[in-house]
Image (cartoon, rainbow, N blue to C red; front, side, top):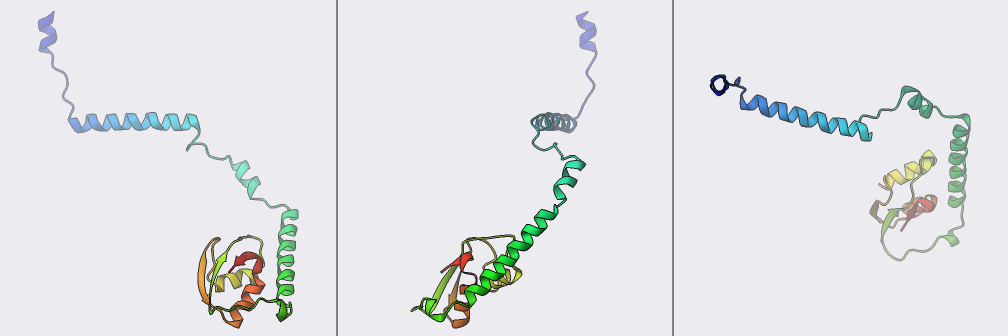
Length: 145
């Protein structure tokens, strides 16, 4: 019996093919575990994604009212008497944006954009001119200097 088993040789499989098989098997195992844990393979059903994309009328009304309130407050801050504005002794200011809101009025957003404050906690050095101080007064709740 031993002589017959020794006579038959195993089919030759190249080393590259064996490595590919091993890698493919390892990938299949990791994918299976990820699917079981729900890390990557869990996609939202179409109904869930469609429902979350729909905005209710109340949301539109709230966003509109928030923007309008922001505009009213900006105008009120701009109308403050000059005596209330603190006098700045230095010629250079460092401005930091401390707050970010999605529902701010476009004029407020434009002022922050002109001051190069596009993200929360970003800061810029600016010359202390009358125009800059006026802009700072309008966007006072969103910045500190």
